[in-house]
Length: 429
Image (cartoon, rainbow, N blue to C red; front, side, top):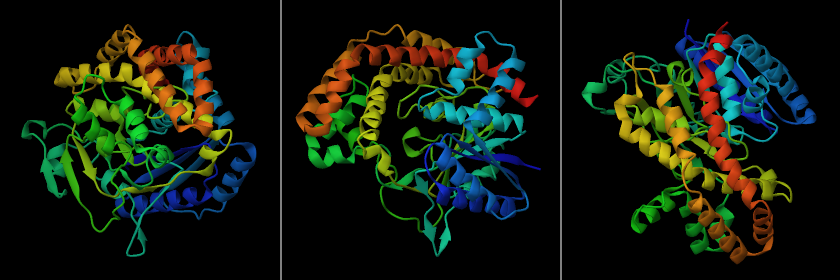
């Protein structure tokens, strides 16, 4: 039996999404004969989690589908057992990296990776609570349709089933390691208001995530493309390409990884940092591991919480930390791209030691570029005025802390990667 993990990490009310996700699990079990572990990792408040519990209890039983709904206490207990069994030093630090007190897009998915290993799953298929499935001819468009058949199998076997192949024949013997698509609808990062207020300020701010040494024309092109996903055109029919998947074409609300990827390398556990969970997309591409890029895009929407008096400054801080993280990640991405095949060992497994080396190299970079980024954000937000100027005041008061956190997040990631093999082994046991 092919056992896989379909997972939804959440910290917000999403009962409708849970019901839709269960429908995707039923579809996967029925169509592919798979054993589906539907894993809901719930970090919502007590009242919201209770609503989720009632929703889960009302889901109809389905052959081949097992639903597991875990609140943070259950997740913490599981992590403590795994960390204790792994026998690693600094267990409290590891627990904090796996289940931090603040929002972490990477950590919630890392918990899904560990649980998937403990359940004997061969792949993890991730969805988000602020998205929904498109409809075509009255039926939901489930991404698992393209994810389940080929993950872990040689790319050559998938070639006959896709619409087109754009893969070097020399890579055809390598396993399909990723399957994914993007989203349609609202921007993936909730900064559309900035664009509506001032197009020039939007371009200036979004351009801060682009490598600093890129020529202006290339920067402008990437800014126009950033956070837009697959645009707004709805699904009309399947199209899938066997290729080295461009990280810009996939969103983490619509992706699946083979276990050989996530059991070697976790995601960055950075807190309060948008985009910190995209690392494996770059790694799979740069290591020359084949993937399937399809067009079953998920529909993205923004929850109102991000625009409240408390949610707005918190979200803007996450966005700014994303900008600061790129100083380090661009260095690592450049090193990975140059490394290419050397990122894999003789068994075509990702070499974790090389990733750790690149991360630790990056922490020695001059912070001047990030100081410049903070200066540009400050100028831009004050130009926008209103609550953006208030955010600028808060960011200015946290300036040194933000710079320190961006570097510490990288150090923490290197530490987690080194601990990861023992954690995976303990989870399996």
